[in-house]
Amino acid sequence: MIVKADISALKKASWLEYSIRFLFGGLMTVLAGLIAKHYGPELGGLFLAFPAIAPAAATMIDQHAKEQKQRAGFEGHTRGRKTAALDMFGTVWASVGLLAFGLVIWWMGSSHSACLVLPIATVVWLGGALSTWELRRILKRQKTTHHRAAPAQFPAHKRK
Image 1 (cartoon, rainbow, N blue to C red):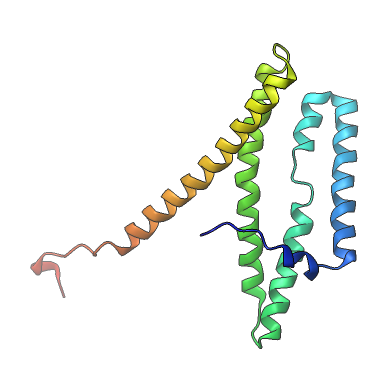
Image 2: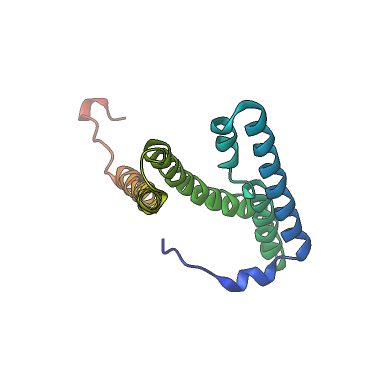
């Protein structure tokens, strides 16, 4: 799979869809702030790391994929779900990187300057996200190889 950006996809969404994403992201940020105010910044930060627009994006991706298949004359329900699920895998990979970023900030933030900590944390974030991507590729390759393996031969006396 080649990762690429498709800027033309921005034209496919309506202003209502962008507004819903913005509203949901804002609500999650406010919720994280309220949690941080009541329970402390450590717990609030965990909620701030929640991919705020992911649920809204997943439903919109599902809807767009279904509409595209229906315009082609097919029922697009399954395709929409698979497309949204694939997008959420990207969210998971980025979250692993974000966790690594947060751990570096937590570990080094109070004892080193931000000019040192932020670049290191960014490199660690990138490494975490790319490592997760590579792990997915390796596991997928192993799964494909495992399914292609020749079936075991049964002894002649057990064949019927």
